[in-house]
Length: 542
Image (tube, rainbow, N blue to C red; front, top):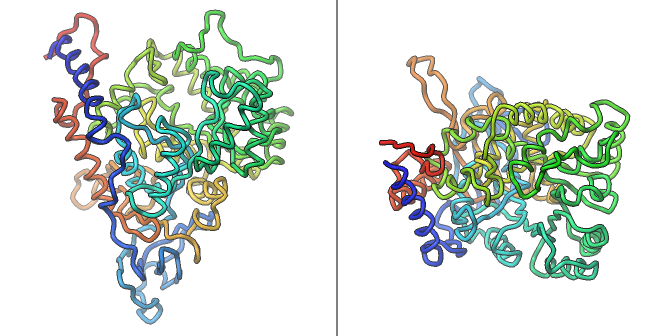
């Protein structure tokens, strides 16, 4: 295919998706057509329990679910021994044999976005929801989208009523974006927060603002009983690092902006090059990769003081290591095996280098940038692991839809990165479940497998503590010791939300069919991605 023909394909890809938006998907979410139940009584029999509290694996156990909640958890024996039927609870209307498989709480994604066909990613909500569920995510804290707070609150109600196939949704709309507009005074800030509350928000996501506006917004959110989190925008971090915002009541932070700035000892501002322009995405992300080296050394008096202050303020951190993963290895992230079958071609095209698309900063990304980011990760991970060890709350979020991160897959990558940071596998699962629920203030209902809590569970055939990769929808490849042949194992077998049973394999098949249909419509070969924007000038490729 010539470069000219590829450009025609790219134009067709954009125009066709936009033309179909009002009729094909739009922002209307289809009624739930998946899932069994709920049942008057559902029993899972013979599984190994990882309950989310941090306790080691137990089992085998039988779990009884009634009315969408956990009614009994019964130990029915020991590994390697036959189970005495007399020890088992009574049968249910529906029973599932999960002998030898692992039962975990549903995962909590604390940084999700429900993008749409009208966004740059041009993907339907159903695609995102099914990817999340297929990876065991039963609860999502939604941190803003182009459809607005009212739409998100409506989607949250539909999910709570199980009218749609989707995780439970906690709407945290954006208080104020990257520029001024409707919120330019403290009075505007308070009015905006009250409006978000009326629209159905459960919390608010902040970016930044002039001091008097930001402090007014945080104060009003507290008065309205709304939880708060923040991406500390670099445009405002001079007066709003994490010590400043947490002092004004901020409850949690996303990413890491604002944290190293609170650790500056010999400067007030980041060491920006004199030709730096914030809206140049490679400038922004390239220099961000050098930020942690400018902070105080690990274990220094300031490092320990900041840690202690945040602990005293009961502050939570959602690092989202995963969304910057491509910064330290662009080639690997760009060619992750799941892109071929699970990443929509429009989403893939959004990822490509583009000066007008957020997070598409690969204008000339090379070894120097990647090495700086690898060093950045070492220091960043050391702080996060130390904060966890000191008793701080660390949650799990993905921020997928940007920077070569596909929904759901990014979440499991985050689990792997927490493991790399020094978390024990049980601590990883705890952050993804109970800790996430605590950060939401929902620990009475979700986050761990406990009698009385909602029946949000996942079942996996392989041990995720031994290998987190088995949680990817694409599974894990290992050598079969009996046949001598490599085989693909893993993927979540069963997802249960509110007692409704979703088949993991069926969810994966639905997602792959959606992607394949889009490729067929756009003339993209199965198992391939449009490579427009990557060919060299004058290059001709068959």
